[in-house]
Length: 394
Ligand code: FAD
Image 1: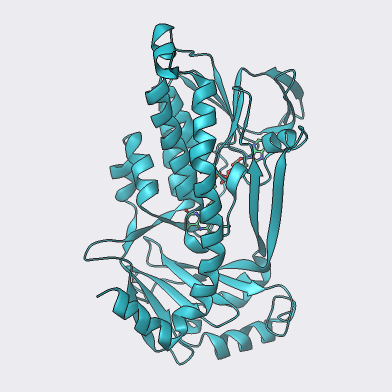
Image 2: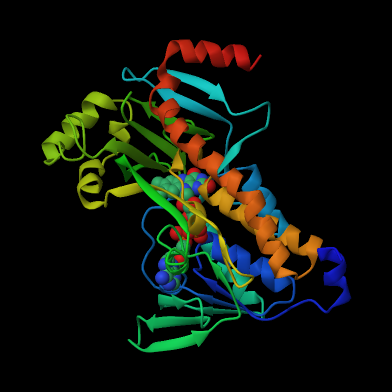
């Protein structure tokens, strides 16, 4: 019989689901599975971000695009998110003399959207809390996954207690350094690679003006392309911009070369003179904020029997230059849901179709993301490329 007729002949397998990781992908996945009738347990090593009491620092924002929106629509929350999202209709490039050039992202009202990572995560967590089928477990760090015995070794970071928990079906949404994938990597003929760019990134801030106004064009993604490196800025609702400097670790112009406050200030004054006046905390932020690394992870298979599956960065962490990491992780959730609609809870078929469909997409995205770094830091500033774009957009 076909998988779908087999599924309709028997009652759907609504055995409990365990999700590792309550980041963006894990919390969206919990909503999708619960709406299908599953009881879902979500384990997250961090504290509940809504209760931690810490005053949130600067908003870190992400570009949300079409594939992400469609996945949010699938659980009926796109309108809620749209209210706090800022459309960015075009790229605005800043050259070293502060001259601006523009490139539209699409036609007329087409845009990508700037959304706060923390705000989006909190919205998703509030929704998971409202669903009685979802049980959230914060401060639970997964130390080891025993695939054969289907058991998780957990450590509670608040109580310092260890416990072993059984699972029936496990969804690894625990990010680029996934513990679930770590267990799969030890199975026979498992394909895995990770590579780092020789660039890191630093989050910085362009402040709001004295009356809370945006000091650069609000509805745009700003880029300062400088050949071997670049800075970008995305707008926040409070009038500020979240900037990210993508910069080499080593070399003449690099993180290691900028050691003192004087060096940092002189470098920004020379390279980003039009942004510098709006960055009063620049030197302090540059020195205090951590330097993040940029990893690409590829692996296969993404599933183990009909028992374990990886989603989001756990199976396909990519560098951020295409703005598609979260978006494609969200799409993982909507594709998995569509396959469950198609095949019923025939997990074996659903899992194998899922990885068959998604793996080539993820590989293409990883390559495009690296390619787009070259385009953004260098080619967008090249007059020949601008002319080419102009011709293409006609
Ligand atoms: P994560 O967000 O990493 O969440 C994983 C969760 O699992 C975390 O909460 C973690 O605490 C938890 N966890 C990890 N290990 C364990 C364990 N052992 N036990 C229990 N819990 C665990 N994407 C876009 O689409 N658009 C953008 O504009 C964009 N910009 C980016 C900019 C930067 C600088 C970076 C670094 C990334 C950017 N991304 C962007 C990518 C995006 O951030 C990721 O793709 C997305 O966060 C992946 O979500 P996730 O839920 O799979 O993983």
